[in-house]
Amino acid sequence: MIRYFYTSGEYFIFLAKVFSFNNKAKTFYSRLIDEIYALGIQSIGIVTVISAFIGAVITIQTAYNMENPILPDYLVGLATRDSLLLEFSSTIVALILAGKVGSNIASEVGTMRVTEQIDALEIMGVNSASFLVLPKIAAMVIFNPFLAVISMIVGISGGMCVAYLTDIMSFADYVNGIQYAFVPFYVTYSLIKTLFFGFIIASIPAFFGYNVKGGSLEVGRASTKAVVASVILILFVNLILTKIFLS
Amino acid sequence: MIKVQNVFKSFDSVGVLDDISFEFEQGKNNLIIGQSGSGKTVLLKSIVGLFEIDKGDILYDGASFSSMNLHQRRDIRKEIGMLFQGSALFDWATVEENVRFPLDMFTDMSDKEKSDRVNYCLERVNIEKAHKLLPSEISGGMQKRVAIARAISMKPKYLFCDEPNSGLDPKTSIVIDNLISSITKELNITTIINTHDMNTVTEFGDKILFIANGKKCWEGSKKTIFNSDNDELNQFVFASSVYQKFREQKHSDEK
Ligand SMILES: Nc1ncnc2c1ncn2[C@@H]1O[C@H](COP(=O)(O)OP(=O)(O)O)[C@@H](O)[C@H]1O
Ligand SMILES: [Mg+2]
Image 1 (cartoon, each protein chain N blue to C red):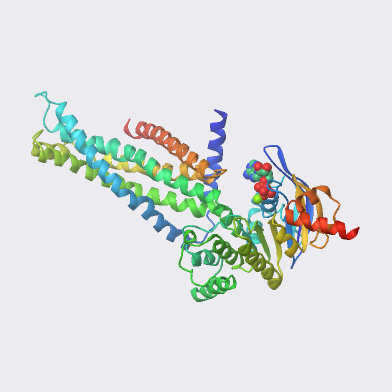
Image 2: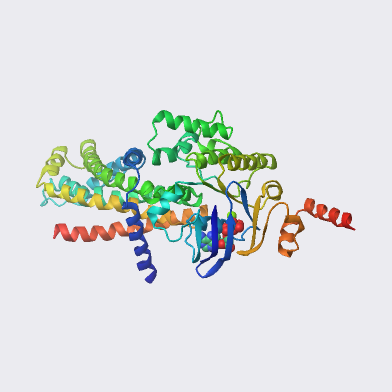
């Protein structure tokens, strides 16, 4: 338990170093562009595939579970839409990205630590934490909302495909459902969450990678620990934000 | 000149450096020698501030590094070039970009001036056709040379080299040693080299600090190293059979 407090203390000291920006702005922007590409654009594929399937599956599941004739037909579309908007496209996508992007960041930064590239930066007088990590955090915070929006659109379309291609339910009911009782705030709420999640997905693994001691074995371990820690933190923060915004 | 005064350093209460004092002189190849694990890297990294020392002081041309704040340290660091054991080239950047990196970060040079400087430094270390390659695409010896080019790109006053020959064949080792030595004389800088390579010691040891188990055991130069009666030093120096024979030869000559 004490160990956890100690680690969180170190994490905040690390963040302080990341945000004490003293490197050239020009280098920051060029690295930011690189990171948006590497962490954001490169994640569009996996987010698209997973969202399409999940959208389709939610639609099928809900349709099969609602054979009771009293329930209105538009419920399937509505359920698909709201599951995606409220939790899937922000939280579940964040968990997936914590695995993909998080392990990537932890091993990249960790490798730079054990091969002394971080020392090399420090020796030159560069604030290595800020130079390496700030662009990653900024990239994830900026791009994560786009990924969520992509996930929402693709997920709802996935459900639509099911409605269109199969005879589980009628296409018109689905289209009606996804428009029924639409609460725009759900989208806002989801996008606010993605900002927090983006920050976690980039900063926690970077912290673990930055503090690796040893060799490539330790880099692997740090990467695993980083993913576990970010996943738990995402779920915890999600709980808190849900409590704040939806109650 | 860099002066190390009574430096102590431990990790989690395990002592690694124990009361080390030494003066590293300008324009000379200052060597830190000792077995693996004796504390050479820790000493080198303590001098440049990558490790915080527990006790003692480090003076860069008289200025106390230990009592400087982060900002002042960063200014000193701009005068430091360092060659790491594994080269530590930035793997995301090409050879050219690696050498150019410090210039991009810290100077207001024009693009033309930067390219001229980069070309000069790479020529200096005899790298000709590898400008656009990534570090992973060149040999270990070339990586070392690129790392030297990067270390001198900002015209440092102090050059630190951590086992510049590790992982290199004997012939390439000599090339690297010669390069470091000639740069030291040419720029009249203070160079500190960690090594356990006896060839380096006998060829380039203008000034030598021998440490064992984190303690200073002996100091001298390549001229005095074979005439010491320090047992630990002799064990280190005469560990290889070549030098063993050399000693036997000398003993029989004396008789
Ligand atoms: N970051 C560190 N944390 C704890 N112990 C360390 C660290 N770096 C080095 N040591 C220990 O310090 C001792 C000296 O290591 P080092 O200076 O790397 O030796 P070498 O002379 O081979 O360069 C070793 O026993 C090593 O285990
Ligand atoms: Mg070493």
